[in-house]
Length: 273
Image 1 (cartoon, rainbow, N blue to C red):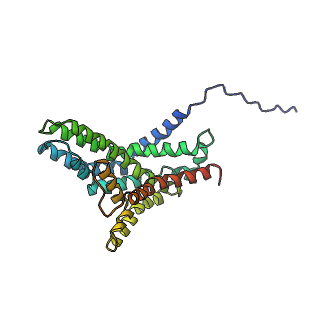
Image 2: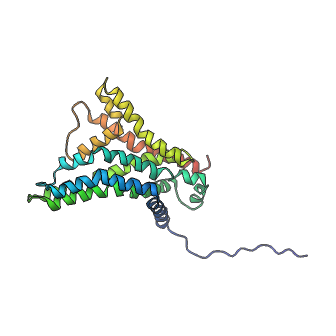
Image 3: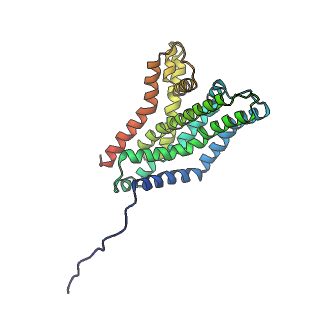
């Protein structure tokens, strides 16, 4: 009996480009989170408590103009920080951990995609969801104040709105990067979500305890560091007891160390280590 060899027909199609692959990753993350009941509840509740009341108040009590101190105070609202942390914990918890758990992680790298591209695709997907709370409402707040203001100075309002764009983008990346790192450390999204919340809560608690001995312990608090960043964006100075280089080291630690750690882990896992 003759055995015929298995023959494969070559595929003559065109490979998808890198941009399309990145878009698919981002689209998947955004759609999954928008359909998540937990994310929707946090978005709705957070928008009502942190954003809706200030926006409505400026409609009924118009201001003379949009000033930097008004928006800076608005961005430092406690509900804004709290729901940003909670939303980041939920949104980012499954970004990478779910790929570990269902073994789809290796599929991403079976195509010519680099760890850096994978990481920033995941980060950008989470950032889009976070922007629904951390970026768009502050811009709407600025537009509402300018639309109802009683004074003629709109130029300064436009400059403050530009500052708010920068502050909103920073907030989105600030919270998303920490969650991304925690998601890259475990296969369980529950651990990643809780870990993200603790990663912000633990240094906040320690900072509040040790600040009684030395005021510079405020630099351990990630929310205080974010608020210092808002001060600088809106043209205000740091407190006298904080040196700029001290703030900068803390800021870089909270913003870039999580991304550096995530990249290192992804690179090792991509090569099977």
